[in-house]
Amino acid sequence: MTQSWKISALASKAQVEAALIAHEDALDWDPEIVLSGTEVAAARPQERPQDWLLEAWLPRKPGKADKAAVAALFQGKAPKLTVEAIPETDWVTLSQQGIEPIRAGRFHVHTPDYPPLHAPGVVDFEIPAAQAFGTGHHETTAGCLAMLDTMKARGVITRNVADIGTGTGLLAFAALALWPRALATASDIDPVCAGVVIGNADANGVPMGAGAGQLVMTVADGMADPLLEARGPYDLLIANILAGPLVELAPDFARAVVPGGHVLLSGLLVTQEPAVRAAYRKAGLRLAARLHKGDWSVLWLRRRAKGW
Image (cartoon, rainbow, N blue to C red; front, top):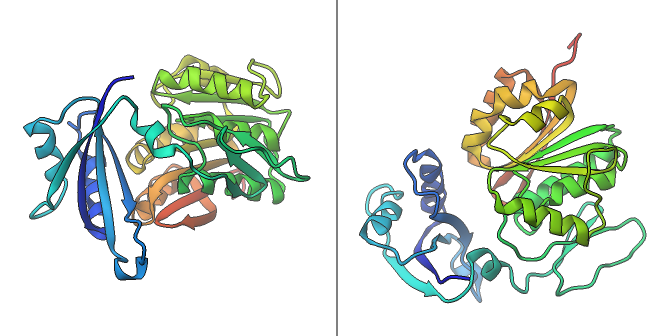
């Protein structure tokens, strides 16, 4: 592993949210600079309810241009930036070490540091800290797990599912646990995720392959991929990515889903929900249900069927 660096900025919740939105709109953003925004943990949170931290993680020592790019995300005067070295580790592993298990619907997600529950009605998944997003501990991933459980409880039947921007493969694994005879396809733009998904599938007993009850992994940018096209259309398409790509991909996602099919979206802030919903309404999908996890939205949409 190589040394990583971090640029931090303490600001209000509103400022950090605005900076994250500005980052999404920055077409020339350096993809090696990864941003996150988190609430500041304090011994007495009621004394600092609006303190948030914007962190930018880099695989190199930040230069003037890097610091200027982060500062430019803030409207008006930027807060003080702090630069520190993170020795011999990667930022995702660092951020996820020692995290406790979570429950979302029937799913129990834990790292190798914790045992599975082996409880009736509970589906255990072991997802280690890795160089991919989607361990289940972020509110968007946990929200998707809960919504998948809700969809199953409401009678949704899925024979063909795609998980776009899969990260660790967790949401694809969950879909197969709920609909064990479905065809399942996972994709991600990051080639690192291919090995991560295969390793996690093996650890969790998820069979890889092209048949019913098996998972196929591909590296793809959006839906422009021969395998994704060949295995569609889908009864259920899952995308836990970011609001900007969700809006951009709305027409492609709509075309990839059968009439009456389902789309599960997350990775968007509550403040970004109106723009995302408008894009999918225009593409022919309507809202079936939604939930909010903290400042994040999870949307269950359905494509119009004949007669709607």
